Length: 58
Image (cartoon, rainbow, N blue to C red; front, top):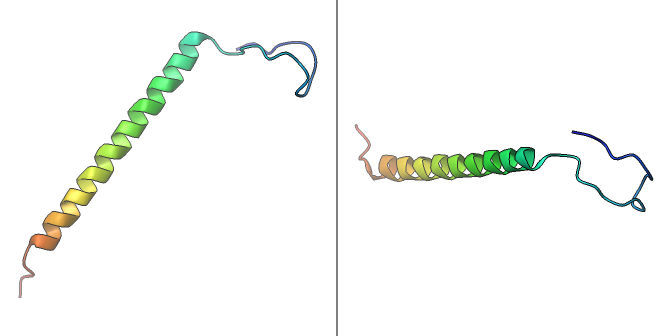
């Protein structure tokens, strides 16, 4: 990644500092992370429902 030379602050013209491959890799990583989090939450909810449906052994 390269930094743009020039003005500082919000007045300077914005230039991309990362390649498109890097941006695609970050987007894919975030998508996989979100999907895995959804799967974990779903499995947790199902296991809680199953455990609540079981009778308590005396």
